[in-house]
Amino acid sequence: MNATVTGLGAWCDYVPENDPRVLRFQVEEFAVLSDGRRLTLTADRGWSSSLAGSPTTDDAWSYLTLAEVTETVLVVVGPDEGDEAAGAHPWVLFAQRLRAQDVDTTPEALRDLPYEVVLSERLQARISGT
Image 1 (cartoon, one colour):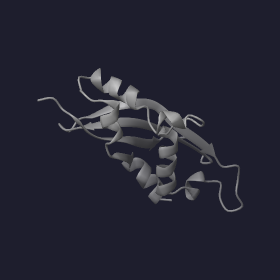
Image 2 (cartoon, helix red, strand yellow):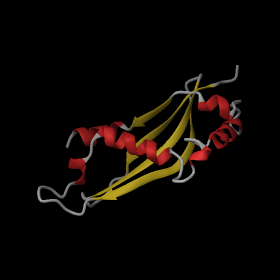
Image 3 (tube, helix red, strand yellow):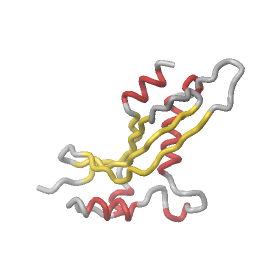
Image 4 (cartoon, helix red, strand yellow):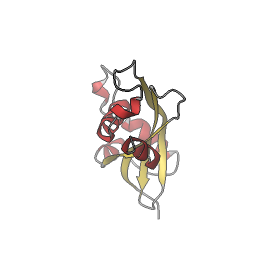
């Protein structure tokens, strides 16, 4: 039996930095298969930000919430500015990458699947711990 795609999502983690004023994040998009596998679709996304300074703290983590990270992940994986005609995700590319891994699907089928944002346990702990 061939596995089918049951969901899509984005996984996010932080990249450790020596400077507490700098935040850097990596994002990977994935497909969840009916047999439990998770296949990576993109691994070249992410963002960084820096804190110019504050009267109370120079730790950028103290200003960050899980909701803000989740919202930014969705922006990062969305269409480039001015490219809304392409849709929220590169469905054709996703379908091609899945077919290359022997998962039969179409861009239309992928478009209708649930999409979740998953923050790494390490990232959740870092934000919750501040």
